[in-house]
Image (cartoon, rainbow, N blue to C red; front, side, top):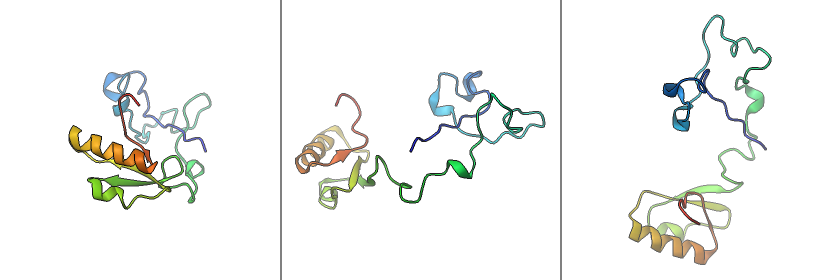
Length: 116
């Protein structure tokens, strides 16, 4: 299923609303009386509605797998093949040990970051 990205009105126009700053492109419901988004005008971005919801079978998953937050080496033992690992905020030394152990078990990491 393709997830649609809903962005704030005029976020492409102003820096404070998210132009070239993807982190600030947060959805806000249009409330203006003459707002084209609120009026659902043709040629303007869509509003999020019930039809855009993910199915119950896929909801809460990343790449079809259940996310599991891992803080230390003992948490990796709890992971199964149906989990995708999210490494918590840990130091570089501990993170390298965790990555080695995860790769030995043949599990996926969601937030590895950097060069893969």
